[in-house]
Image 1 (cartoon, rainbow, N blue to C red):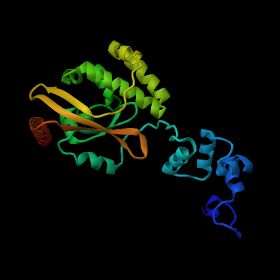
Image 2: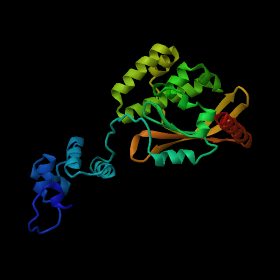
Image 3: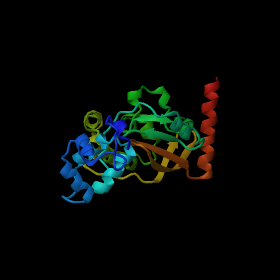
Length: 261
């Protein structure tokens, strides 16, 4: 590390980089305690100490995570940051899946990006106000979304338990409280499921949708994390059969035709 980048004088140094006392000063800890940390003495450092070291050394997100894994054996707690969209590069990833509906969701299950297949098969999110582009709100308060689920109760239970896990991981306290209160007021079924306190990790599985005109469409779903954005997840649905793929193609053709009219 270049001392000048931290506003420290250059001068002659026996070794390149910052001195121990300079690192300790930037992290607001004692030089002795910092020396013990380097030597592995004095027990494991607290998350607060590691966070101050990360800030003092101006570590990047991945560097900060690596520091926590070395010091505590786990990554740092994440802090929820509301997102209203994604980068153009991430949107291009979605658009590269022409017959696989895919969305990007936040820890509160707000849908912030989607591809054309998702708009044709799941929900045309562009026609909804941003505050209504939420998987939970749609699942529990939208009759059309509910009717499209082949097994609504199983899907609803999974969504609530996965939402609980996401919310805890992202630390979205106030956002979660407001959303849970709203949904509990609007849907007794959501309130009952939330009280069960079930937690589900993200996994892959099979989802069945019933389209009013094209019948049953079977999809294999997988959830992926977004590197550098622990508050975001990408949910991709691949057609589980040739017939389901054909029906998605028909829906896409119909959607494109309606746009050209």
